[in-house]
View (cartoon, rainbow, N blue to C red):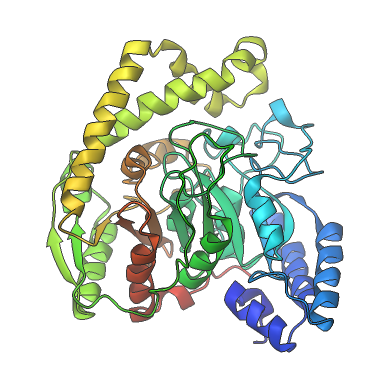
Length: 464
């Protein structure tokens, strides 16, 4: 492959093992592309080029000696800047933590290193993973490689932008109300929010204790499954961690969807929050493709999208306030305007509201579980609109909340977002697949079948 920056992690790993490509050669190509494109995209807060190159040379030496540490040996990974990497700042893209140096690696970073991965740097986010595309922070906001005048989704904004632009093959993000799946949707890549508790959050700056997830962003479904294999697993020191056994999440990737039952939650985008017509058309096309591949697709009904979103908002607001209250009381001016505006309402949510929301949450979980007894996977919209212009605050404020991702933070079910087409503006549209708890393998199965049946994974942004 002449354009090394478009290699997937699976392809790079195989090339390393076959000794047809070296980790140093691959990283050098990526660093050259980063040097050319990141001044336009601002995916990085901190590029750790020297340490990454030292790790690539060490990985190459191990390959020569016949030692492979794991399935990601020599593969560069970008890291959202609320996840600790020892020796590097974890800033949360905020003035509050601009000098906060991590003493140890987060658990997910430990697991990636054990698998041989190379940390290439810390990536842009929305301030503390809640703000939005902001221009009053210590670092520039990331841009969308399909059109740098548009935002790349968030809050894992640098993760989505960098993967889509070929700056690195995979990245870590976090997802509390959709923040892995939003950049995946906006940038035309693959982003998974795993089942709540499947991936440790220890060493990740929290936003909402009972809604936070860590998940992978990649350009292909196979890479996403490979990364999840690496980072999943029980952590007794994470109170939300689930005591489940890790498994090979990509084991069903080649099975296709014949005879699978897929429940299409049409009312999310048709009634509850009417989507852009091109998003609606793309979703109907996804259903037709899956039916042509042998799946049964039927309309199903869940509680309203607005109710899911309202419950998520109360829980997130309450828990985020409990984390940020000391700084908001003593250093409010050190927050950006947008993050401060989104965090402050938590001060006015009372205990009764929080408890009532958690009780209703259990009923919403039961409602989704009830529907999923009859279906292997659910399908629905992710974003209701393509990404807006990053300088159009009015349009961004209007479209940013228009999404169907928060229901599955509220319920904890695994959900993957991926490209479903290109709008007339040249920006990606998206679809979301949702599975039973801890059944990521079936979610990947459906996503991979759709990926094979279409050419969207081969489409690349026009930048560079």
